[in-house]
Image (tube, rainbow, N blue to C red; front, side, top):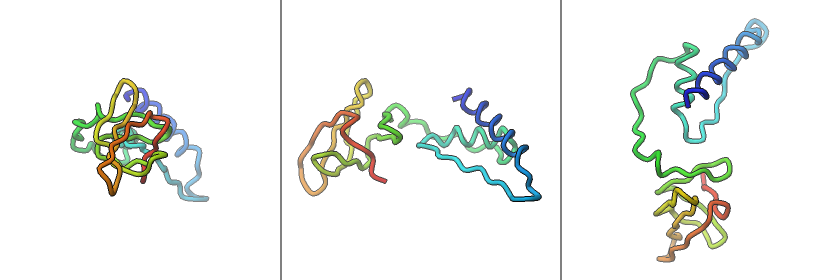
Length: 118
């Protein structure tokens, strides 16, 4: 994460220096993918915001990459069988145990077989 914060701050500084605010105002837009602390670090490093209170990282170990999204216990996901809530996550394989909505059915899906519902 440290490299990402440092490199992101360097890119943002260069972008802001490149843009001419007299011609058009600039804005920085970030996609956090549930990694908002990296964005906080970038914004702190370039002087746009002050240090925030430390975030609770208790759920960090329950996160598994799924394409461009992240899924963790408690997230709603959809798979071929239906839509439901992740009740368990196998960190070594990315396999999610999902309780399907409107039933007591429990299914296990590999990480390529489900996606997070936003």
